Image 1 (cartoon, rainbow, N blue to C red):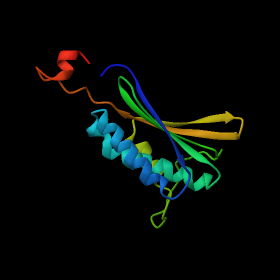
Image 2 (image 1 turned 30 degrees about the vertical axis):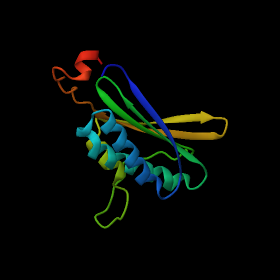
Image 3 (image 1 turned 90 degrees about the vertical axis):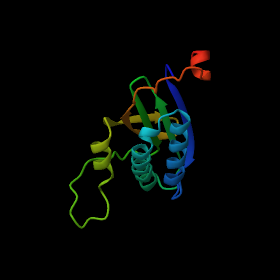
Amino acid sequence: MAGVLTARFDLPADARTAGRARRLVAELLAAWHRPETVEIAMLLVSEVVTNAVRFVGDRGALGLTVALDVDRIRIAVDDGSSMRPALRQVGEDDESGRGMHLVAALALQWGVVDLKDEQGPGKQVWFDLPRQPDPPRQEGSLEATCGT
C-alpha cells in the first residue's frame, strides 16, 4: 500500500462523539490493514475528542481526520475552540487532566495548529502513531497478482 490514504469525518460535539470516533478509527485502521495500532489509536482519539467536546460544547461540529502515510498514521481533531490543550500537573486525587499525558506518552509526537476560517478561531490537535511495515504479500494473492 503506497502513498497517503486520508479519511475525514464531521462529527457533532456531543457526549457520544468520543465513542463514535473510536469506532470510526478502529474500522478505518482495520480496513487499511493496520490492526497493530487500533488499541492505542482508539485510546488517544478518545482523549483528544473528549477534550474537544468539553471545550466546544454544543457550539458546532468536530472534524476527525485520519491519514496513513509512508511512516506514520496521523490522527487530527479540529474544533471551534481557541483553548489549547496542555500538559499540566495532576494531583493523585484529581479526576481529570491526564488525557494529554497519555497522548504525550504513547504518540510519536503531537501538536496543536491554530485554524482560522469564516466562522472564527479554532484549532487542530493532532498526534502521530508509528506505521508498521506492510505485511509480506502471499504468493498467489490478489494483491501480489495485481501489484497493489
